[in-house]
Image 1: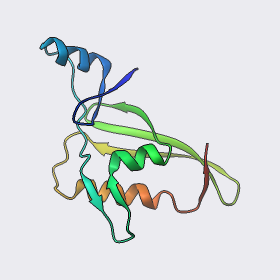
Image 2 (image 1 turned 135 degrees about the vertical axis):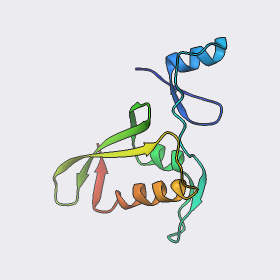
Image 3 (image 1 turned 90 degrees about the vertical axis):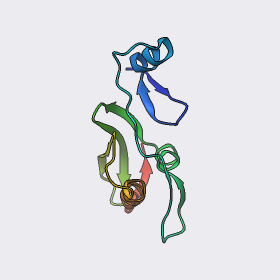
Image 4 (image 1 turned 180 degrees about the vertical axis):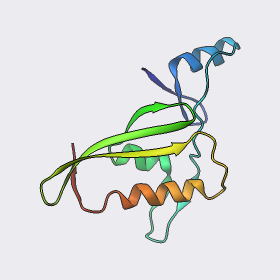
Length: 113
């Protein structure tokens, strides 16, 4: 499935992007809270910035958007990490919480495969 980045910065399925261009329905946009968040550790930016910087790839999305990556830990083991984000978050803190979860998953990671 091809991923297209919409003007607002949220990934949408190619069929949804085509439907949006033609003005017709049929596709669902996967809207994610890409708000800027600044945490106590000094990390600032958007959730999208952290996803791109840390090697996450888009897996799928409808009601939830799912990202994954493979990492090698400091002890030499390889692990698959998955991060799920809501398409329509109901909480104003969701961007900050997602950022915190993503940064926490970097602990103990030696490299991203």
